[in-house]
Length: 367
Image (cartoon, rainbow, N blue to C red):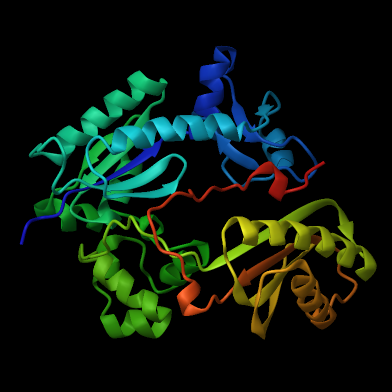
């Protein structure tokens, strides 16, 4: 069987890098992209800002405390999309087996590539150079025989890095990884592994499949395989939309149920528009509530009919809101999502939408 050749490409500090291209005076200064408001969060931080301990998803207020000279730039998503399209055009010069993960990140399967190049690392090197010439941006690339190792490799020598993990060197490479670098290992899972005395890929591989599945369920099998360099996940160029939703974070916490209903009414308008735009219908509505102490709950309700109209959304949302035990806790975020489509309503086709985080500005009210 032919050895797979997978490349993971990830732009370096993408949003900030685009802003620095458009405004060279920002270079060399601590810069983040985000909204500079009471509840703004860091979308992307450049490498200067990261030296101060600033990182993505961090509150802007915290970032300001860490760096008094911090520059906050409002996001320009149309510009980021334009740069993303240029990058993806270059990807498709080499293969159409491209799995976008975000505007600036993708997997490429170049096992059988358009130019007929033998070495995947040569393709990655060319892609890096072409992106730099076409956009002025630097990207980091990881090359290996599976998605897990290609992804880890792309993070290994940032910024402007290129790292290859050869199949014969895979276990040696994995041995020296921290468990936090494994796909699917978040903060809580990492702490759980640490409590088990597991800090490295080598130590993870010493655990049996039974031990891992007992502790982590289905993900235990994933960790077991990854620790052995096994990852058969294909690069997926097809997609199935399973849900459509929207949410809002509020500058001023909501304390009255009438105010929450009014905000849900606004969300329902937007959700109806998104359902129409995506030709999506589902049987289940999910209500998400995040309180001022950052604790979050979800409630869901499933009806007999497919949900597609605002009236249906609001009727179900009211029922769900009545189930929420507020316990005098103010609410900082509300969200509603339609999911559980009928099997025949799954939409398959080439990926045309990119997952973006943080969401567009109209999805978070910050000021």
